[in-house]
Image (cartoon, rainbow, N blue to C red):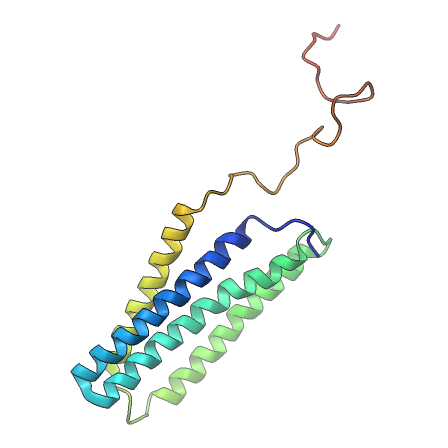
Length: 165
């Protein structure tokens, strides 16, 4: 496991927290607007659209956070891509199952469901952009420079600045 956190970890955690708050606000708004537009069916359709978007968008960030726990391990890259790809495959299967389950439900108002889903995805993308723009992460944070561990002793390979003859 990683002794130092990966630079993407704070960004993903912040994005998940903000996305959770935005999802709560959107769920309330979708329920109210859906109820006003299509009654009880609209209320449940709006909630379902927001919830499905939140779950699908959260799976990606969560899978990356889980995979980052192996940073520094010799198998980090295959483990990382295996976990993230597994998350994507899980989302694909869940999406197909959700479509098959919801397509013939009497309580689904398709227009309300679609609008709630699209607005939730757009809001999540906006949150991701805002988080990325506001976070102060150095461009090169996960590397160590040559000579950073030794302080320029007599056996150091670091250039002293003196001309070589």
